[in-house]
Image (tube, one colour):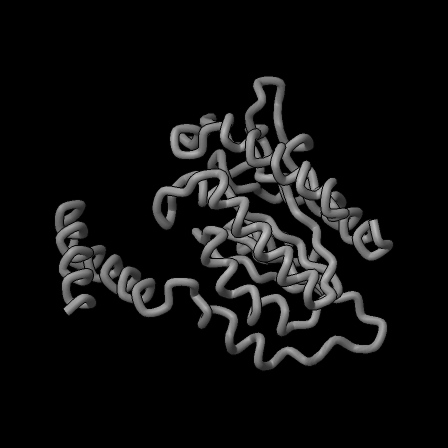
Length: 243
């Protein structure tokens, strides 16, 4: 009964937004998939099962995140090819979803380092209203899980957004991004973690995401990833050295 009610709810919402049958079906299929696998544990299950254990001396790094991480390997595959870098980003995800899949998508892969990039979708309310405190608690839990399993942690700043291409700041207010980044930086300092500051490298003189490094005011383009990659590499090296 609960599933039927939720399906009816999604169906009503879809019909309210469009009368295109193909689009309605696509929305219903997407919503059904979310209901059956909210954290998207199935996304990388096959790839995880095929992944061999790290070779002796391999410095495996897992990049855990949302669409910014998900698109990284597609727009800049050279950052991952021939390296022990594993992309485990899923578009649209929030920290509670990442926390649920942290064991299969991070711990089970036995990396030496995990790079966590999350929070922007929490601020946007992708999986419901989230206070900064709720986001912070999810970060704490992921860090504690990593530490308990001998994995070094790099915590990334939430990236800035801009309205140059399309409206973004209404759902992701810059003040909330700044506040969350201040907490992340302080948490890293207090817990001997590496803070990866993408934010400062990607803002313009209006404190917005630089127009030329984003496709939509939220996601980086190739030029954006070119800024991120050396910062990420440096942060990983710092983590491996013991900060």
